[in-house]
Image 1 (tube, rainbow, N blue to C red):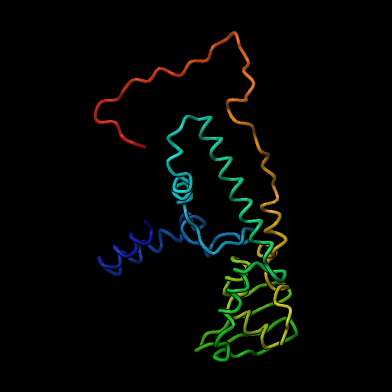
Image 2: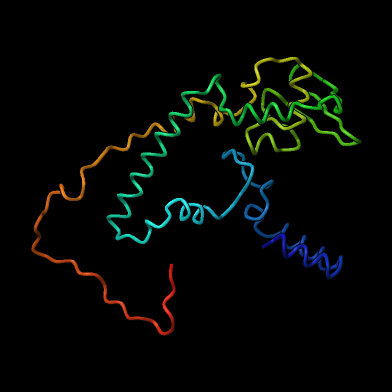
Length: 222
């Protein structure tokens, strides 16, 4: 929505575009700009469509009654955790395959970048008139992508390659290690008996569903 507003303002004229930029810089930068986010959570994108993804994953079972819905979600989680753990058992090395694939991609064509080293851990990386400072032991680059994503940016990768450091995993955040992946899916979801085997407990007090009045118009399907 923000980008759409910016593009609209740009079409209307530079003054509107400048006003929009000024407004966004003064208000809620942590909401609209990923580069302004904190670096605790290692993620290279921000999105609010997780609910849509969840609904798509759940599928038609979300039309079931609440107890049946929760039980079906529990079963789907059991299947997902089992698949993830089976996948990670096949991984070789300390890093998750996605991180390895990223490193292989980003280390191509690094010869176009220039490194001017000031110490074993600090250097300036130059490319087409631009310059970034990289600090290896702190996993920092002035480009900030390394801090935000937890994976070395192209400037950091250039410096790491320049030092001929074979241990790439030391420059990747622990979130991308196989051990962390195992921790994420280590939770054991216990199996449960079928609903026909549940213990039936009789209670004196009855709980009835709320009285719902049908709103005017055609009923919407959720």
